[in-house]
Length: 285
Ligand code: HXC
Image (cartoon, rainbow, N blue to C red; front, top):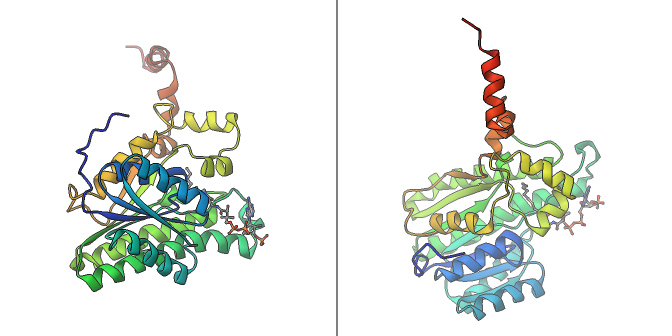
């Protein structure tokens, strides 16, 4: 990918990214570091976190990591302390850590529901409150971004804990965008459609046939590329978007619209054939 932003777009930003050792979190960490942000990644597995820090450092960026489970508010506080001790005060947060799996909702155990909701909803609250308290105490401005999903608007069958928790996250960002504007803290959500990662795809789109069907729901018939998502995230986390707050920005190649449009399937027919069929339906004069 050829970089299209100025290389100092994120200079002066120190960004904590949860779940930053793999998947989309790692992609955001690498891209933002390349644009001048100092990156603090927090996650459960030190080996993955350290490998990402090493990759950023080898590319000339600045990064540190701390282990911690976002479900545990004391661990979140300790992780912020550890990252700030290495990088200086944090002024940004990306709530990226998530948990999800496919299950019929009537079969969910207490612990299954609890695990996903605690990671997604409580984890986002723990981290957002932690950064918010620090920014407010220092009188510093900042940015918070939460990665949600396109089903945040309408829910989704078979991923009920995630759908409920992500809707809560979006509501949290919107509530705080109003409440913390006085502190110059911006909060937004990004709702990605299908961007392939090991973590999500192994749990949610297992197998090439299901993947093929998923691609057919995207008008362009392709999944998103990581740099397309990280470009949006870099813009929202930069000083180029000072008036953007309380938003939920969808990036899905119009997949969600396609799924909701009655005649969307025609877009996948050969256009000549589709036009012939429509012309044949036109009443003859
Ligand atoms: C039913 C399941 C299950 C499954 C786990 N459980 N997997 N129930 N079907 N497939 C149940 C367990 O049986 C247990 O309940 C409870 O959930 C907790 O499981 P643990 O494995 O002990 O929990 P933990 O180690 O904390 O792991 C949390 C997790 C796991 C959410 C279950 O999947 C995880 O760590 N995921 C992180 C990464 C991830 O999910 N990435 C995808 C994000 S994608 P019992 O009752 O047996 O104790 C995303 C956006 C999607 O969020 C957008 C798509 C386009």
